[in-house]
Image 1: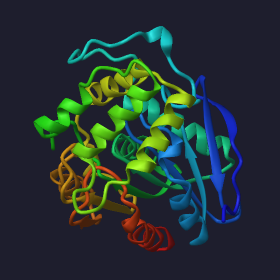
Image 2 (image 1 turned 180 degrees about the vertical axis):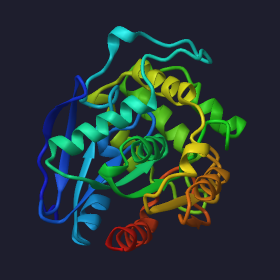
Image 3 (image 1 turned 30 degrees about the vertical axis):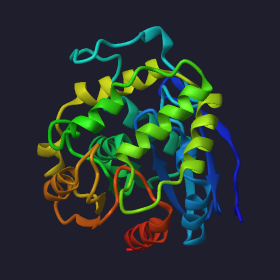
Length: 287
């Protein structure tokens, strides 16, 4: 059962951010940040409900250049490999900080997956007073720390799909490569989310701008060594997009952080592991 769900818009950092929420507004504030080219819908409603049931007021949102939040179309498509980027992870972290303000929260427990983990790390570094705890999932302190395998890298370089059917087919192909080999691939869910994501906002150029922000923002390892925010690191041992070395490097960089790795998990959040993720996150935020 969805305890509370309402889609809203907030003007932050010169753009508009679209978000929705689950659970009681009086519960522990928990901000979910999604990854490269992904949308708030990729935090599954069932997963958000489990977090809400454990005493969290859960907010998931579309990053800039994704979903129904502002897309910076005027910035064009960055040239791959170029050091130039229309914005940095620091700007995306400022978006998240602005959303925390708009929600009326003093600070939040912040959970980020993949690119979302990088943004969450940057948020904790640049706005430490806004982050009660940090949970970094299948992420890394820098793009060169744990590069993808050639097969996974090829999925990032795939040609943009020409239509909705092609977008669904590409999603199926991509998750077959980067998903969790230890768990059955939920092809029905992948197709449903890919179709919904296409309908909400199909913008390969926006994804390219997000990728440029990752590459232009560099490595956070040195700064993370001075981070005092309580940190949990979760990572799949079979991740080929951001190999598990990224999780180890994140945990090694942040003092007193805790690392939990999952056999058979790739670069996704397999449903059979939801209860484990929720257990670890709840233990972390309650502490």
